[in-house]
Image (cartoon, rainbow, N blue to C red; front, top):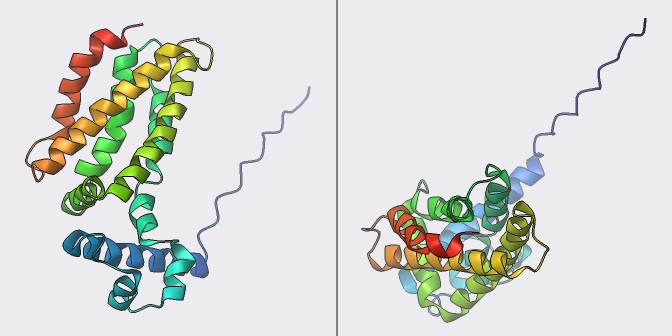
Length: 210
């Protein structure tokens, strides 16, 4: 008779060190100060010197966390691509592509409009839309997210990487996402971007059948 020995439990994640917590707090304080100034004054009218003066820090400290004031805004959205990809990967097998993609892009909608401080996020979205350099960086980042989602969708549908349908479908999904966010921003938050997203995917449904 043999006794089976259970596999050892994986080690618990270590809590962040004091230095790590301090770095996170400094990064968040710089970001909050920068976003407030940028939203009120405008992107071109706000300098790094303005941000560090308001935060009571030095330029050296600022550049330890952010390469530029542009990065402060863009890094706020840094994790959304991974979250959308994870959502698409987790959708039930056999679910229609339109439904799976709607749930994936809803992650971004929920982050913006469902944020605990939606007014601040709305100001950031408006800042991105009206600032060409930020809008370009945002679209560049979205292009990478879209390509990642296309790979996941192709695998879900049993298609070869680079197949046309997943690329077209994910591009349309981001059109729906951006349309909803733009209308939300232009309405000063009065319209519901989640409802707009649902309406957009109802229109896209026939094109996303596979």
